[in-house]
Length: 400
Image: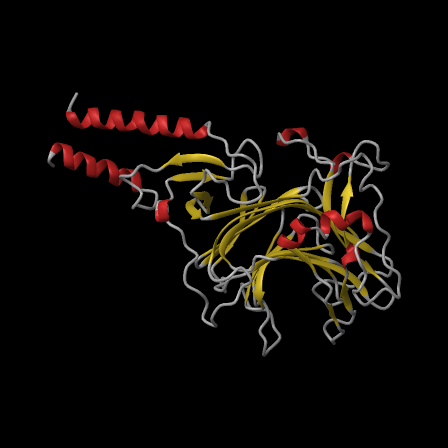
């Protein structure tokens, strides 16, 4: 066996040992960064991408008793149209406590009618609540729980956003994440949409009308169709749709069932996934400014949303949101008109010697160590890093 063969065998054994040790190194569940992870790796459109930060927002098991959240709050009355309604006492601790308010805000803004949007919209905190599902609740269908094949524990609660059509206005719901300095991210929403035609469920990153990356589900569409886009999609002067800006994808799994909807917002490229299957990609108007996460459910009677019948209602139910991301600027946002520098992470940069993964893990939301980066390679990045390390060692030892 030549010296080169020996070196390659030793390197292979070392790499397998490193990865084997890492695969057994589970990270303690945490909403925020894991202290054992230096950065987070995902595969996006077949390429590895690295992020500095991790968040996991989990609404699956919030009940402390079998009937804590089993009473759904009633829909608003016709005269409750100002957005000043408060959360019911049942939800104060969960949706108005310190932890929630650090992470999320419930919107109360409204929108008046226009020619294109003939129904007035009004967001209300009364349309955001926690719902509880268990065997003791009547009318609970099999689709209300995660299937055993997904190899995760059945949930008992979920976050709900509701929209209802009243005679003179549409009562709507929106929540925004308080961290508004994301500059590139991979965001996953575990959600489903139910209810009547005429509503739009939005899962997106946003800072302004030209820096927005959307997943939009229209309840008037077939349940196998989802609209993906980077804004703007309509020309501000002509009012016409910009060709190629909106990507309606058909033939997907039903959004009425629990699905994992994902946006990968990367430099110069947006890709979208359903249940880890790549379904759309775009290089048009990729956001350049630090942004935040938004979830909403709305209708304004326009041609995009459709016009809900009076008394009709739709729900967006969310089990969890997971995001890995980089940042630029302060948490509250703010950046120059030309965008911001930063937001792109290289493996091994700033001491990232422990690379974790969030996909293909034993428990969703709990990162696992993917591999550890040796001192010889921490200055390298990209899929060929290990090859260059081996080459450098061979040159040094063999004098090539």
